Amino acid sequence: MKKFTVKGILIACLVPLVMAGAAQAADNAVVPLENKDCVKCHVEAVRDINGNGGKHQTAVTCLDCHLEHPPMGTNTIPACSMCHDPGEKKHFTIENCITCHYPHHPKQMDFSKIASVKPVCLTCHAQEGQEMETYPSKHAALDCKECHTAHGQAMTCNECHEPHSAEMTYADCLRCHKPHMPSVVRYADDLPSALCGSCHETAAKNLASTPLKHGALLCAYCHKSQHKMVPECSTCHGLPHGEAMHSKFPNCLDCHLDPHALAK
Image (tube, rainbow, N blue to C red; front, top):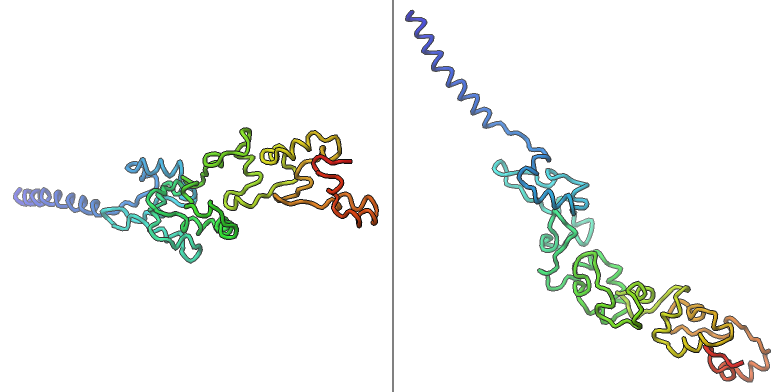
């Protein structure tokens, strides 16, 4: 009886100790996080990246960027250079990425904290920078954010400039003008003559009223590709009157007066 009692006492003492040891082992075990765990606490971040994350949503997961989580680790916020190697692209050499980019919606940029965004923009948009440098204009003197209030968006020409005519739309402006080199006016051969007539009213009126074949042509048929391009009559007509006549009267308009309202 005494022996049993001693064993009973030992058993009674050992059971709590074993249970306490098991509980401590469980507390010390690290249960790895899974991506599906993130939304349990970070609902807003997950919603942002699902709606506007771009490649941050499709090419990586939460745990690809956030390698640790407190209290087990302090390396919570990744460096952009972890994926965006400065050696690959000039844009990736710019410091303080977070000034423009929020990682969960990286292309919705806030330019308000930067005095001039042009040096940053040109690290990606080199062609536009080259156009402004080659063809200086008042547009080239502006900071990018004065027209591009948000990344991927642009003000329309009519928000700053009076159109050549009331009917002219932003799409019409772009048929002749490129915003980063606006003084170079180039257009396709099918440009409607009505757009030319917005500025060249007299010529358009004469051309519309002439009974001769010039009246059936688009302005761009003769004034090809670039504004202020004036063709030679001989380009289409050759020398129709014979060499002697053309030697005596080398300027066709001395007799025919106006190509938009030809005198026969």
